Image (cartoon, rainbow, N blue to C red; front, side, top):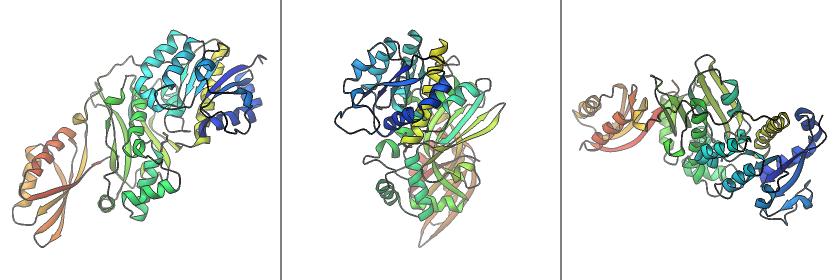
Length: 429
Ligand code: HSE
């Protein structure tokens, strides 16, 4: 074993960073044996230097993250600050001063992954970010390495624990969105400002990263269609139950049937109770990967939290340290396929549409005609109501999102349609 230690700079010492530091200390001998050299915490950049941090030598703590990454003797920078700046500048500065980088920053990788990979390549360093998607669950490495010889056609998953907790609570208790969100906040699953989770910004960033790696194509955050889950109602869950389904916020990255393009989207969807993703409860994450040779793979586990996320960071740290000792780098960006990313209108799936209509002769025929005129084939229709008003639930066969959008627009113009109560995609069949 090499005796000179590899030096690690930790940027951020919150829930994840403190766990990374703790495991580095408590598992130092195992990590050294696995890497082939000791790893030493050489500095910890924080915002609040006066906070007591158990197990961390106060002499290592600094508020000057820039000076730390510029030191020149740092082998690996671990970035667990989050957000775009100063993380981006600190990472590029780290590469320029000879360090490899392990990051847990999904927003930054989704937005600037290509530029950061280019900076890593320019300096012959590694950029690893297993912890950026679905916490502890190994996903980036399986997609980047284990499936490198296969052809991935679809990635379908629950990649946000907060929203899964809320939807699971709505499903199991019949609660409305706000009540379930309040419970998630009280239990510490939802942040004080839950926007990034409930409006699916967090899941969209993860979808962009997964799609890019799965399809060897640059998928920008703007390429990902995003719909949050704040509009999902208890009535939607009741409808889902009648169909033998539940509702999940899904990230779906797909290769088109002709293989010539890809799509990436995040939105609430109904899935059959028989689908394994329907049974992913509480704040757990799970991702299905469908590939040509391997078939269906499912990855399941805790998608957030200090310790699970630190597990993924430490795994990357070991890999990057091994690369440094071997004088090599791991896989960089693979975007050679450069497939076009199609808009949401091109996505083909099934739909569950709930309409409030007048209950009189000819209404069903009118509604059915609108579907037919837009080339959307109806699978089932269910009607209930009284006193001249009715609720009509239409489930379609597979149709493009553009065709469905046109259908709904035309339905809204019918005098007999009082309102479109909800539109939900049906996936996983
Ligand atoms: N807020 C995320 C979640 C974890 O609820 O899954 C970090 O991406």
